[in-house]
Length: 338
Ligand SMILES: NC(=O)c1ccc[n+]([C@@H]2O[C@H](COP(=O)([O-])OP(=O)(O)OC[C@H]3O[C@@H](n4cnc5c(N)ncnc54)[C@H](O)[C@@H]3O)[C@@H](O)[C@H]2O)c1
Image (cartoon, rainbow, N blue to C red; front, side, top):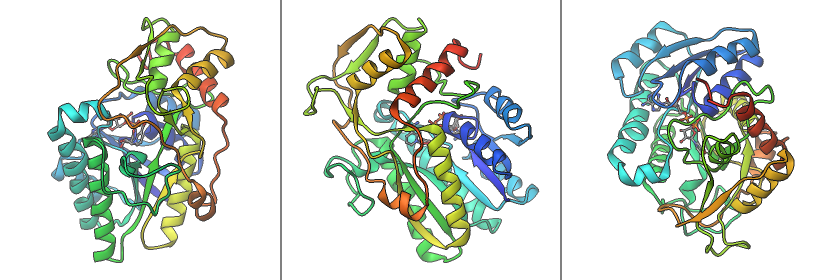
């Protein structure tokens, strides 16, 4: 059992992480600026776990407040989710992405170092592999051509952490490269609730299903993929949270920096997702083809062998489960957390 600080813990993945931590008997301190979330998911997490956590509203760019938090609380490890995550937005507002994702991470690492906290699990992304690698992506492939500004911020943060581990052996760092997290906790109490028009496929799909949006836009049907739509590796958010617990355990025993892909290793096209969603949930989803989006790669999926072998982690959920759970969450919460 340890005290874990979760940055961005009120968000989609962070809230599932907090629940998994509480259920595994860890104590949790969440810091979040609530720019893309609210307090309700954390209240529900406490109810589900029947255990409370500490919430502190804080922006990770606020050095002074961060330092105070590390002084006030005895923290063993950090799981770092806080940041901005929309690829298209990162192309329009690069500075904002550099500020939150890179400068914010530097503030966090400085506060950690000052407080002698050296264990961290970082939310990286499969987008760091860029356009020059072929799937399945393996951790040993060169990640040096980020395809968009969001991927650039993830790559920069990974590289900073690698250099910290080289410079000071007290650091113990897990870089988790997520593929596409979807689904929701089986209770239907927490799930993905983006502000404004969803950027990711699944909330877009479920918001069409609930009648909040008219039709699903499928961005591009002329990619070099079997049906022309983009192919991604979808991973259940509960499996993803479990991977963090395994990584945390691994890192609390070993120093240095290590990278793991967290995906199922299976690629599915957007069209296939829509059709499977319709089948398992007995729904019809109106859709249209829209132009390709800037920054989207045609297809990628993970080689997840390293994570399974070294972390002793294995994804438990199939695509059908993920799509049922996503709908279960949206159906029970038509307006999200409002
Ligand atoms: N969801 C995905 O598809 C995906 C894929 C790969 C990697 N990731 C990474 O995983 C992490 C979590 O993603 P998510 O889907 O849960 O996103 P999310 O937006 O739901 O959660 C991020 C949380 O961070 C908070 N936040 C943002 N900027 C902050 C700042 N400067 N200070 C403090 N809090 C801040 C937001 O309010 C939000 O609660 C992100 O770092 C994201 O880049 C997500």
